[in-house]
Length: 180
Image (cartoon, rainbow, N blue to C red):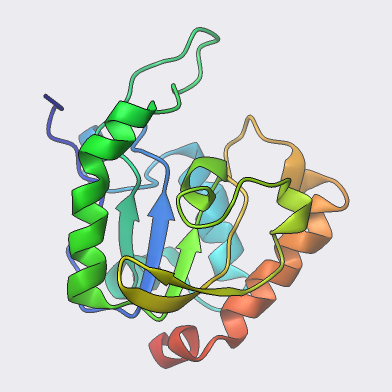
C-alpha cells in the first residue's frame, strides 16, 4: 500500500495533461508534484514559452505514471517504478483521461513517454508531435526529457535543440494557447 502523496493538481478541467514518472521524496512534504530540483528546471522551460509556475499549476492537470514515491535506488537517485507498481496505478490515469479528455499530453521523462509511445531513443521522439489514441481519447503527444539534475541529455546537442523544438510545439498547440 502506498503512503499518501500528492501527484496531481487540484485544478481538474484542463485539456492539457502533463504526465510525470512518480513523485520524488519531497513532493509529499511539499504537497505538489515537481516540487523540488526537477520542478525548477521544468518550470523554467515552461516559463520560456510564456507560462510561469503558478499559472501552469492552476491551468494544467498534472498526473503521474505511479502515484507514490517508489523509494531510492541503489545509486541514491529515485528508483524507477517497476511493472507491478505501474499496473497498480494505471487505473488512475485511465480515469483521468476519461474525465478530462485531454487534447495535449506532455509526458515527461522516459518512463512516462513509454506509457504512450514505443520505446525508442529520445533523439527519435523529443521535438515531435504524435497523434494517438490514449485511454479512449485521441490527443496530441509532445514528449519532453526528464528535467532531473542527474540528466545531461537536454544540456548538450542534439538534446538542447530538440528540447527547444518540443517547447515551441507545445507553445503553438491550440490547447496551450487557450490557457494563455
